[in-house]
Length: 304
Image 1 (cartoon, rainbow, N blue to C red):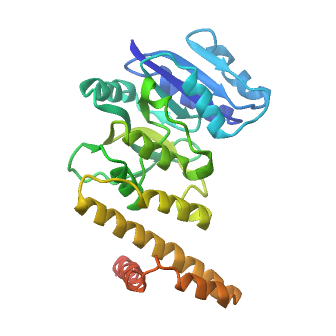
Image 2 (tube, rainbow, N blue to C red; image 1 turned 60 degrees about the vertical axis):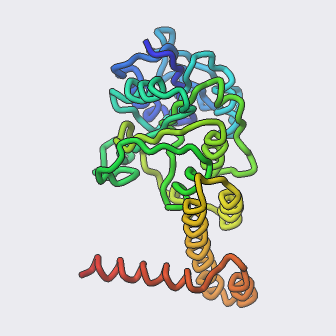
Image 3 (spheres, rainbow, N blue to C red; image 1 turned 135 degrees about the vertical axis):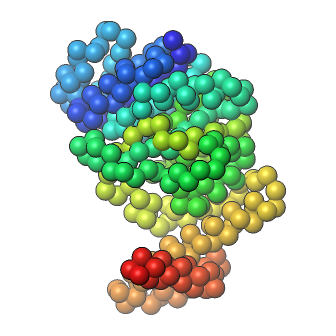
């Protein structure tokens, strides 16, 4: 039995919750504890998993709905196993997930957390054929030992998935989620974790991630993404080369976001906003032209 608690964070998705729970029960390496931390769902959600409760599966409910951060935090604080994970109720684990990821943590005491690539699934739970990150050989495990390396992952339009992450409990519970970062709190949390130890990212897909509309960061508020960018800008890297790469990626992201805002402002005839965006010291016109040129090249190549 593996010394890990799998916390399934649940809210009003009974069918998805059943699938997530079954994927945990089907693991080749069994967890010491499985707990459903429900965030104030209606009664049908508990009823959907009643047959599993009392046989190695616990239900930890809530009288009313709270924030995701509240539910995540109480699950983390309520764990007494060596490792802990927070599985979203709409995701599923591949059968060898726990065995593989716990093995990775056991093999290197410097690691404080692991995450992994995943298969996208549709609303019906069928794989779409796509993965979060395209697997093209290379190193099977990416290691982040500086917060700037985590920031670089996000600045490169990728991420470290939160749902399949497994943490060393004694380390992770000392780091709080920063509520002011809202929908991008996961990126900040992994940066904070990287300040305490290494984070390993398995490039092999080991879980299934259900795609929902509006998940893309382009749907996040402009001011929120600028706040995250400012946080990333101050992160530490291994050397000056990495730091320069991170800053360039952030400038490209900033240019892309600003051009979208400029386009929207032009459509509305709001020239004051256009001029304000153009005067932004982080908006580099040369980089903006590069971004536009690369987009045009990709579209032409795709059509060709």
